[in-house]
Length: 255
Length: 306
Image 1 (tube, rainbow over the protein chains, first blue to last red):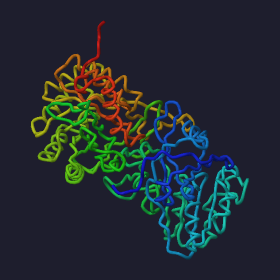
Image 2: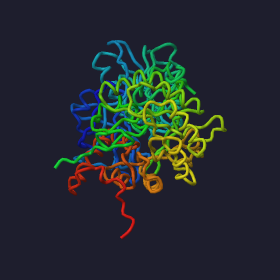
Image 3: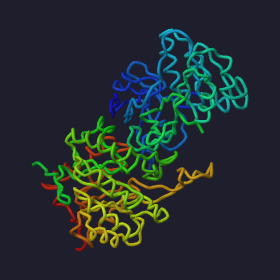
């Protein structure tokens, strides 16, 4: 098994709230160095009776700092969000596959739903550095559930907001905003039904999606986090943690 | 003073009493980035069947208090690929391998073990928590006669010691253990997961696609210790691998005191990829602090009187 992942004792550098989400940065040069956009880290937590690490896609890298952005949806994520600067953080990473950065130039479409938008910020920075225009579509059920829209506006060249209830941007789904955007590649992250809808509108363009599945180990040994694909037999179910989390949209057998 | 961590289990000489539990370590390839395989007595590989299997649809796992539920459906590449790639990989690293054989009929278990003859491995473990398709999917491990049938048939073809992994979900584990031992098992692995269920009350759906699944982790450790203790008391000459929620050196020592010769580490690998190495080191330091120079001397040391 190749890979650059390490188990490391990191230090929390900062914990901030952006809207309804938490953005945490930790100092981990062993992870920040090799990390690629779309990859994730698996963080130990100490909530009562909760054993498993929690996986987070990497929001961005800044020198030796690794940033994650997440929703506090359970005891484990709440415990991690309660960390203070200077606290130790037991992290495994960087893990999994990454987005394939396109040839320089041209334009790419980055589509994120809720906190699923997190890895697109890392990608947008790399795209900007190589002269690829990034058009970001940020969607959520309601305005407060949009992930860091101000930061997205700075990270991408254009931004389109959609909300299911119309409380911000276009009333509708992220896919409603896709038709007006000219891009040769699509990069998406968010809930499975959203990813399925985005992949269905790729029209032959490269479409890479980062999936989120329940994950017990994050390192490829437990086989809980699988995604159904078009392959037959043993390879029909592929692991989100090591075969993914980034998959070519044409590989997945969408529901 | 150096502590001797070596143990003997059914004629196998293991460097340490720590081995991985089946399905929690792959065959070591993915986790070798994080932990030193040489600190292990052996790697018990993920169960293989005769043909490749795709396993069941997700969701396959859910976290529960001090444990987790899983239902994977024996996803595996089939015994032939496993033998030629995984066992070969472990052999190159001089790591003792124990293959785990699954099946849905007595014939399938036999066919799997026949294909493992001559392979680089030190033992075979029979995963009897597979549904018997000839008896309406009833697990082999739940019935003394069926468990003995598989054991006897496999022993006739195996060229390595055979361990039989049993389920705790039975009314009389000792009776099943005795039947399997009488059928020729060289040792037992106690215990496999216990069947559990969890429901998401918002969606009103089970949290696993199959409804029910195997509960593992520290939540089941007292059940495992009880099973090891009961079987060791009744069948003191049958070697036992203890298994079920071992997360620390102390947990492993508890199982050895209950009667296990060696201990399998499963779910702990998921949240601590260095668990096997750490637990072996914790056993060593516990023994050193107490002046115990051989971990094997701890076997069955639980005091019942006075």
